[in-house]
Length: 166
Image 1 (tube, rainbow, N blue to C red):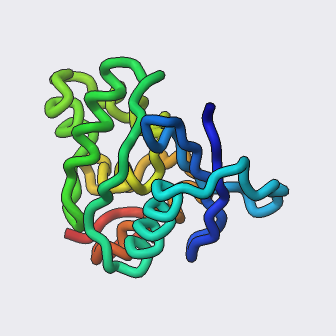
Image 2: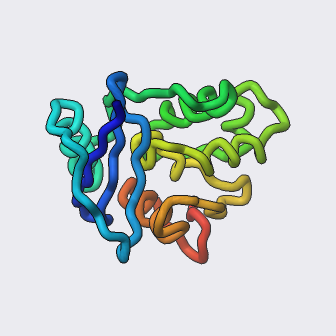
Image 3: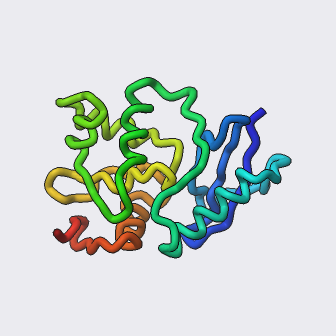
């Protein structure tokens, strides 16, 4: 049985879904969305998820260590997202680089598609993937590119005119 919990954070309310394996989905709720709160969950994984999110958003956590349930994702999406999870705090790669790491040497668009369906907002840091021109591109989370910029600035990057200053 999948359960969920709403977690209030500095960037808004995040809903986290859990299976018996681990985190299955995490996303930012719309501001106007009514939130029922939770679905009978008070477990150690919830407490750890909440703690790690809070520590990340204050700059105290550089890498998440949560059990993730990858089931339901295609093999390529799993590979691309697992590669994305390895991008260290403060570092950036391009969509093309991610595609190569995931074994698709001409698959920058496919890599972007995998990130567009990232079920693990922030935990799998798709915000660390940018265009080859340094520009911020598509970020499907609530808040879009403004949230991507905010997360990158939290990690020490300067963004001017929607581009990372190198």
